[in-house]
Image (cartoon, rainbow, N blue to C red; front, side):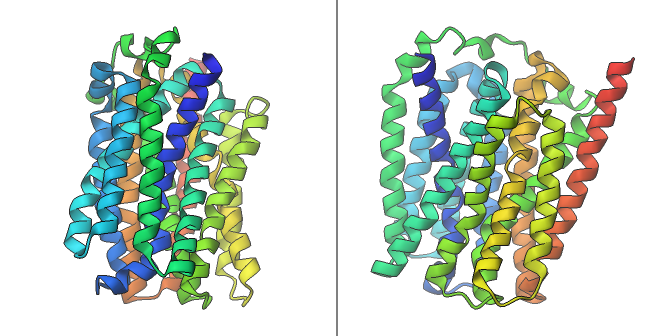
Length: 389
């Protein structure tokens, strides 16, 4: 039962990743259809992320009331029908409306499952959990690429992903009794919550929240604008860019798979340091003005490899750094903070791309990567000083 429940949790994270990379891979074909500027992808991304912020802040209360199993199953269904709506939309404002449930569902899944795994599983499983998120982000751009290349239809790409999401949601609903059979499945609901206000008073929480914002700013901006960067700067065809852009997601997925094997030998903080270093190397690579598609996509893969251990390592260290009794509330706030970065930074870069130059993407990403390094080291210092007292 333990292994089967873990497989169900992994499946749920595939469903979380499927929609995340779909908009970025489809947008070069979508924005002419809706007769809107390329920067409008940032508006939709902002609304989606806004929904995740709201559901993340409410995750502590919602998860305790309904349980992780129901929150996960219902949330996947919500995102599925939002994707179906995207495929049927014929006006840009309809996309904006549908982006609300799109984000609400994603935030609820993210906060509930991250806390569940942080409390009850090793760092290895946390890395592999997020590896399966990467599987989802890889699958959907390829689906979109096939839909564009063979059928010239981004709508078909959304409909195929909708079908996959509905199948996953049905599987989650059918597995609810499995969660009851696992003795640890309800324990997170019995831990006394520190609450949002109390969490902010704990030393080290504020810099870790800021670090999450920086990480998601870099990750989400790359995820949304990689394909457009390849089209506008490298001259790659839109249908190829959708597939090439997924190299970033492949890097994240491969990196998290590898991290699962080494995470118990290296500390969370060392995995974070190594990841940020690789991120900076990859970002420096895409700034080099070479005319070679392979090198370009290779650098995006390196950025993904660097991103791989950062998110799961910060999440997994939360109960150890701040206490198991505080982890549900703090992880919910961490998710909200992360999505603040996802909400505002990709559209901000969209404005930069439209009014200045999309070639500034590497500088934008490097700024947040360096700031992330500073903030995570600040948390390490605070934890070290607390231990010494």
